[in-house]
Amino acid sequence: MDKAAVRERMWRLLEREHAARFPGAHGRIPNFVGAERAAALLSDQPEWEAARALKVNPDAPQLPVRAQALAEGRRVYMAVPRLRAVRPFLRLDPARLRVTPRMAASISGASRYGRATSIEELEHIDLIICGTVAINRRGVRVGKGGGYSDLEFALLLDAGLVDASTVIATTVHDLQVLDEDLPETAHDFRVDLIVTPTRVLRPRRTKRPRGIIWGDLDGAKIEEIPVLSGRAAAAGHPRTDGATRPSRRRR
View 1 (cartoon, rainbow, N blue to C red):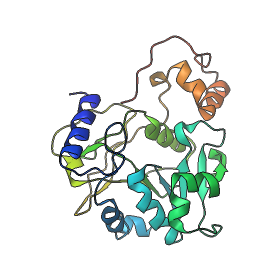
View 2: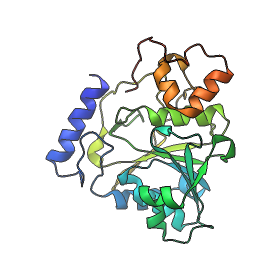
View 3: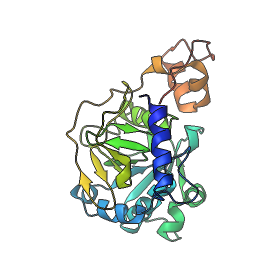
View 4: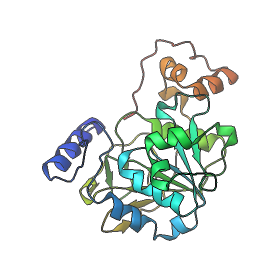
């Protein structure tokens, strides 16, 4: 079974079991029932307590995670949608915010109150919280198909801003945790900490991707993302002109 089939099956399951909230599960990181409980349980974990700087995905089910982090005085970084900016991250520093953590943690609030930040301006990331469509007990994760979480991780890894001490976590509904094998590729990262509204799973840490895998990106994808096109040009990468080699779509 490929990743697209896993996504479709999970989206249907969550909607059939009434486990997905507005605006529905299909085509996105599902906003699941119990997201607040999962965020609260995550905040009780030692990996959370040790983290000062977090990178959190901007999707709706992780809004409680972002708000909790800001309320506790932790700095939060969110990626700009599709990394389409020269400064591709937004920095939310609770010491500088003049609005409530929940307002700042929303997508619109982060765009308004966050500070656009380049990769060179980022600090070391202690904890990454990623959005997930499906995951298994070994930490193999299937996202919504854009591949941007993988790219963000690879960019930060290349810049030395994430390392072996950085923990990768996700919050999901219990139905999203599967017992079966899931497909994965060389650019996929695994999750170290899985938190649902009712339980915490800690898969055994395995080898992580080493950074950007240029062969998995076509020229058009590189050109769409300023930080990628800049790095490719600096490295003399031959496919920064929208070359016609077919894309191996990230799944």
